[in-house]
Image 1 (cartoon, protein in one colour):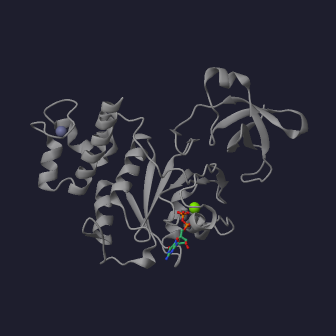
Image 2 (cartoon, helix red, strand yellow):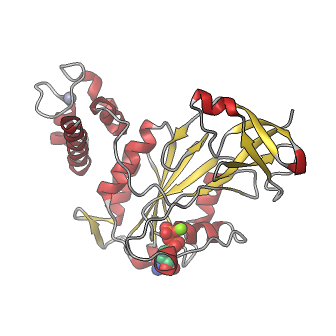
Image 3 (cartoon, helix red, strand yellow):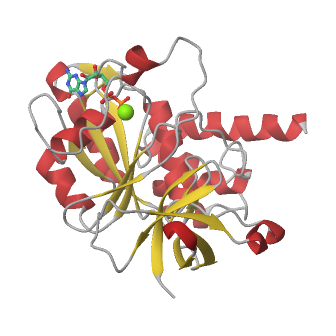
Length: 304
Ligand SMILES: Nc1nc2c(ncn2[C@@H]2O[C@H](COP(=O)(O)OP(=O)(O)O)[C@@H](O)[C@H]2O)c(=O)[nH]1
Ligand SMILES: [Mg+2]
Ligand SMILES: [Zn+2]
């Protein structure tokens, strides 16, 4: 029975690339999922490795799904192992609160994360960008936490090689607000992709809802990438207050030493996280965002 990878899902059909065809072969097999999945409440996802059988007219049926190594809800995609978070220096302005929110999601989903500060040509290292910090300070902040930071410009090509190398052999997802230059950057990194850019003004009317589908695009060197539009309205629906502290990677060094187990690092006595904020071991901007997100989860709890 042939093995394949679901690269696209659209109105109940799953488009499978057979493992027997070459990587990135354009010929996809249009499949339905077997009824058993629905009965079990399982939805096949883009990124799933599957066993399928061919039916008439070169169509197929997805018979089995291999265990997933990761699963994202929005965008709905499985087996992603690298998230590239794209944040522009300007247009739109650098938004560190949103970056920290994305990081909570990638951390709690167990993804490796690379941060791209894009549109470098619109700013330099001495401009104050966000929270009174310059590009150098912002980069240092996230590098000190342990994140790989790549500064890019689709206009000059800066950073493109570095991102390309990082993506090699992964299933990656490009995420970030619309307009930050995700598609433009991918086009520079992989000439020949020709993803549509600037879709906001070109295609969508203001306030219109778009339900764009996710699709995996084959990269020349064996990897796959999803250019995802749907990451923008992140909420913490599936997270508990205790998860939030895992979402802040640098807290993990301190939280085991907090006096109370399950410390939420607010006003508890003997909180090592708060102490680290005071002594500069944890950046204040990160801690403030932590408190904000924790507040969002608490509010949600009160409402339900
Ligand atoms: N100055 C500058 N503009 C860029 C850069 N990258 C993208 N843009 C522009 O930003 C807008 C949004 O880009 P797009 O790639 O569609 O963003 P996406 O929504 O994140 O995919 C377009 O008008 C691009 O021309 C860059 O590196 N520098
Ligand atoms: Mg785009
Ligand atoms: Zn604590």
